[in-house]
Image 1 (cartoon, rainbow, N blue to C red):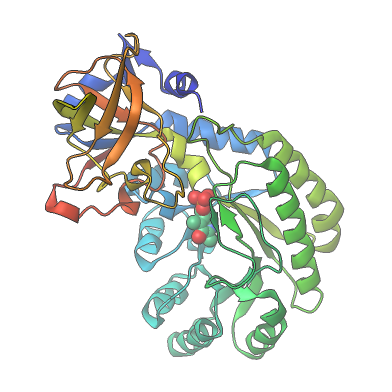
Image 2 (image 1 turned 90 degrees about the vertical axis):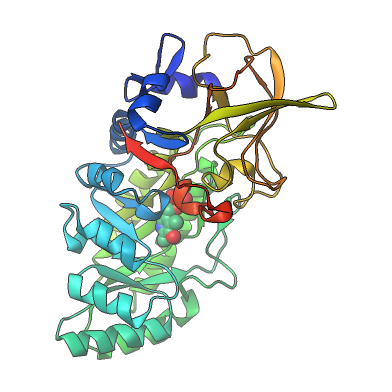
Amino acid sequence: MAIRPTIAAFGQVDGQLAVGGIPLKRLAERVGSTPFFAYDRALLTDRVRLLRSTLPQRIHLSYAIKANPMPAVVQHLSTLVDSFDVASGAEMRTALDTPMPAANVSFAGPGKTAASIAQAVASGVIIEIESFTEAARIVRAGERLAIRPRVAIRVNPNFEVKGSGMRMGGGSQQFGIDAEKVPSILDKLVAANVEFLGFHVFAGSQNLSAEILCAAQRRTVELILELARNSPPIRYVNLGGGFGIPYFDKDRPLELPAIGANLAELLETLIEPNLPGARVVIELGRYIVGECGVYVTRVVDRKLSRGRQYLVVDGGLHHQLAASGNFGQVIRRNYPIAVGNRLCEAADEAVTVVGCLCTPLDLLGDNVSLPHAEIGDLIVLFQAGAYGLTASPTAFLGHAPPIEVIV
Ligand SMILES: *Cc1c(COP(=O)(O)O)cnc(C)c1O
């Protein structure tokens, strides 16, 4: 991906990156210490607006909190999206602390314990069943609490979605109920005292091909229609998401208009005629928050070793594991990086940017061209709004956790 448009999205003031309109050095003073994550409130709002204006109006937009569970971010998004997807009891509490109604929160993910299921039944969120054990736990929790659980079935589809950064459906999976087993679990649910709402298919994450995503959405709708033939009436159709964002040089942004057109056609030709009035959901994490956040670290050392110039920063993989290449990447490539207080200067030096951990894995920029940076300068890693802090091993080496701000 080109770094210029990324910088332009945030804006600059006096040769410095601006986040929330605040130049970076001033923001660092305001935060009080480096490293930190900063999320741009206006960019978050714009991102949801872009989705709203490009996807059909009828689509319910859900935010998958695990991408960025910072409470202030979730609060901000609670007024912009239609629903939240949570994947743990803790995320459920974060969601329920916002004005979002519990009825518009869905709870997915493997390994739901009896305790987290009781929490979900008591709060009235939609529980997305991923196993027969979970189904039994839900029924028992409903009986014990005298509350009718609201449930959907997460289906492991009978197809795979190619080109995803992480595949989470098709073949053998820890996620969802295999499509061919859905009739037997439906029999059990119909016999029990639960409110069955519909189906959910989430087949993969970080996909940049509109063509593949459109084909996956079509197959998902066809599968759900097939399952719906022998199920109680369907009021909830969660088509998943998987929309990717560009991280690397060769990546091109997703063609969102093509996805909007495809969804409009699926709604008109398949969903509306067969499942009139059903709530049709697209759930996105990374696509909503990923490009709206930066990770900011300070240069603490410059070091030349046998011809290679190093910049040592006060952050590292313990805060931003993905940028080091250790979160799901097969081949390590550089995340977009800049000297945030020298945007107007020429990139005239090849440097290797490393973090402060005592491991060669702590590599944030491998042989990147940057303006000459001095100790005290601020190094910015972009695309840090999703799967940053909470997807990183913060306890490793015992450094202080980074601060997060939304501006
Ligand atoms: C992780 C997850 C998401 C969000 O994925 P992104 O790639 O961040 O959009 C959505 N739904 C479910 C069920 C998930 O587990």
